[in-house]
Image (cartoon, rainbow, N blue to C red):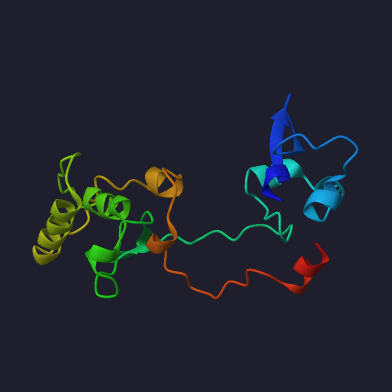
Length: 171
């Protein structure tokens, strides 16, 4: 199935659905993957799916994740990754990229070549020292723009997510 999976391609400013690899001669997409994605998305703005404004599975707008509030000023939003509750999860179980970002937002220097254990020790020292957010590093512009991929473990999921629905069976 994945060999012929539908992908979105931009051609001259238009967004179209194409197979990942060319379909064999005289074979329909539905024969290979169980449905025809071009037909499925015929009345859909493919560009909106490409830009992740709507979810391809439900054709509904994607919900935005609210930014966390500054623990020192509840009226201020701060970027995802700037607050981690280490009482719920030890630094030993958090991705290095998340720990690096957490240190950055506190102005804690860290060598680029630091080993994982050294990184964890720096985080633990910052926790013990009560290192607070460096508000000069957190601007409203930075908080509102995606700087990088946010992994699932950095975000507190506030509601249960239904990954499938009865409409999925129709696909």
